Amino acid sequence: MLQAESIFKSFGSHDVLKGVSLKVARGEVVTLIGASGSGKSTFLRCMNLLETPKDGFIDICGHRFSFAAAQRPPKDNQLAALRRDVGMVFQHFNLFPHMTVLANVMEGPVQARGTPVAEAKELAMDLLAKVGLSEKADAHPARLSGGQKQRVAIARALAMKPQVMLFDEPTSALDPELVGEVLNVIRSLAAEGMTMVLVTHEMAFAADVSSRVGFMNDGVMAEIGAPGDILRHPSNERLKAFLNRFH
Ligand code: ADP
Ligand code: MG
Figure 1 (cartoon, rainbow, N blue to C red):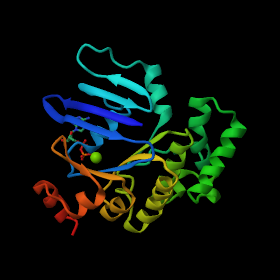
Figure 2 (cartoon, helix red, strand yellow):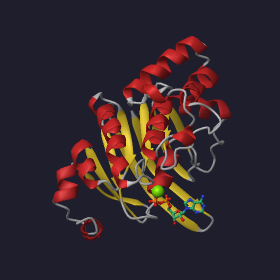
Figure 3 (tube, rainbow, N blue to C red):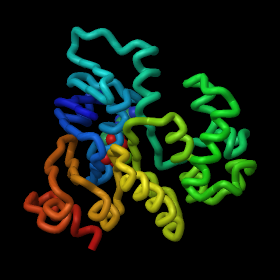
Figure 4 (cartoon, protein in one colour):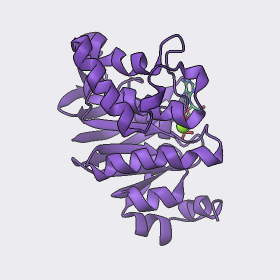
């Protein structure tokens, strides 16, 4: 479903990704952990081409991009096709503040997929029910808690019927008591077989929901494997030191 091969990315002279590879099969949930600045967000952003890698190869839902020096940059229509299939949820929810919750969720299907309004509305109401927010359909984002906003952001991403979902620290900006409601939505997506790559510092959740856990350190995928091996029996010294911070 997703393959990233030897991804390199630099900002100026700062080499942020130094040949990161990841393969994710359909229905897998891969969690990425690692210290702040290790390149997790940049790697996720490279996967849906919010950042353009300097070198490497990406195949995500059959959208294939090669970034060796001689390659042409991806075209806008190729990027749009990719982003229809890949949903992304960020730490900050980025909802449209002037639009109702329902309108936020309908926007993608209507604008990017050309879905008829009535159909988009039905889909959006189904998704709001799924994330437990039917009664907030007509509210504006400013009236919602952080956890509710993030659940709307997830519903909005799902409205595009993505094949893969990327989550970048979806609960890091939330008050602790609101984290669980968002994790529960993600957990239900995992149970339905959604293919996901998730950056999180919620280690118990990662242990519970992940098919595999990858540890990023200083721009490389230092370790990747079954959650039990990575989280409970780490061999890598950097990983041990990282995990010790959570105990
Ligand atoms: P993580 O998500 O693991 O905390 P990031 O991918 O956000 O790490 O960042 C990795 C490194 O790349 C950091 O040193 C960060 O400052 C740098 N970086 C990220 N985005 C940019 C950017 N747009 N311009 C310059 N430097 C950046
Ligand atoms: Mg980050």
